[in-house]
Amino acid sequence: MSQIKAICFKEGGGKAAKCLELTTRPKPDPKADDLLVNIKACAVNPVDTKIRQGAFPAADITGYDAAGIVEKVGSNVTAFKPGDEVYYSGQLGQPGTTATYSLVNSKLAALKPKSLDFVDAAAVPLVSLTAWELFEEHFNLVEGDPQGKQAKKSILIINGAGGVGSIATQLARKVFKLERVVVTASRPETIEHAKKMGATDVISHREELKPQLEKLGLQAVEYIMICHSTISYMDVAVDIAAPTGKIGSIVEVSEPLPGLHKIDAFMKALSFHWEVMLSKGVYNYDLESQGDILKRVAKAYDDGLLTTLVVEQHTSSVKSLIAAHEKLEAGTSIGKIALTVGDDIQ
Image (cartoon, rainbow, N blue to C red):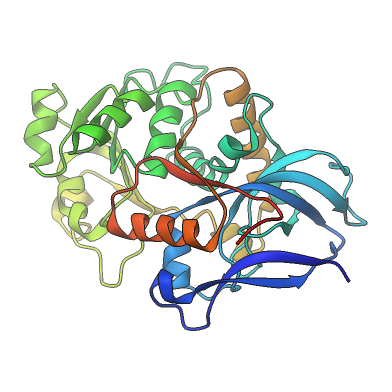
């Protein structure tokens, strides 16, 4: 039986340098709805580090983002064929994408953007799905804003220089057509990156947010997206949210949320939303929506609306994956870190 190479983590997790290791496994065979993909590139996300540490039950091969070439399709698959170039983010609990081959449910995949190479395409799926789902399914924003209802509205994205913040900034401006896209960043390099992604305004998370917004002429914002430290930002989010505003977070908590109990949250009729793009795969619902979103994201890239998220590119190896995990855990990563994948993984 053919073998594949993969980077996995030892049971129980721990520090990246101590638990990530190279392994070989039998090449998997696709089930009825699956694609077998020869992975050409993958990308690293903060959730990968949390899973390695044991925060969520998962298979031991790391990673979710991938771009590659379909080698074989399952018996039920009609939308793809061998030779197709695809990109996707996989399912929690299934073997991941730091490997030479991987299986993915075909409903979660889409043809990769023609304008992107495998590396740039691999950086897109997880973060794009996260931002798009929050905007469309939770905030009820409409792609293209055909009726012009979003043209005068504003969003605050907390932690704008990370992977999710980077694509959320672009989607908010270029796809969902919000007028003001304010992001938080504090270092010169993260401020520059946020502006490159299309932020209309950049404010510092090291200073009080409300006075900074007021200096920009924003007394309140309609949408708030929290991409870091949910607990720390809930009180101020309630304070700066406009009446009937929507607050969303992608970062889990281990204690009750502050802020939502305040009378202002009630009187403003605010709503709070969790966004977890892995949720659909865990509970096996509406999988097709993620493939559909990736089709629309691919079109946005091919139409020239969106730009690359990759700030660092390396060759896939245990050493490079350890470095990527450590950088994400240190909070110093900007945009996305992507890895080329070949048969020579070491």
